[in-house]
Amino acid sequence: MALTRLLGSKATRSLTVLSVLVEAKRAFDHGRRVRAAVLLGVAAVAWKWAVLGMAAQGVVKLLRR
Image 1 (cartoon, rainbow, N blue to C red):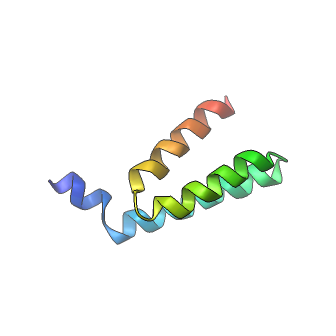
Image 2 (image 1 turned 135 degrees about the vertical axis):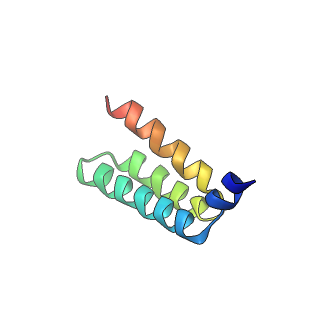
């Protein structure tokens, strides 16, 4: 259960939200407003479910290629 405790820690959740917000800003700066809006929504939810934020970042990285 150490993984559950790690993913649920305040530090992990904060870093996840911050990272998703950075991705949203990057998308907005590149003119991808829909992607930025979705990422802002994910950032709001990522505080509660850090795994969702991590999964969204993985999808964004795959789409960026």
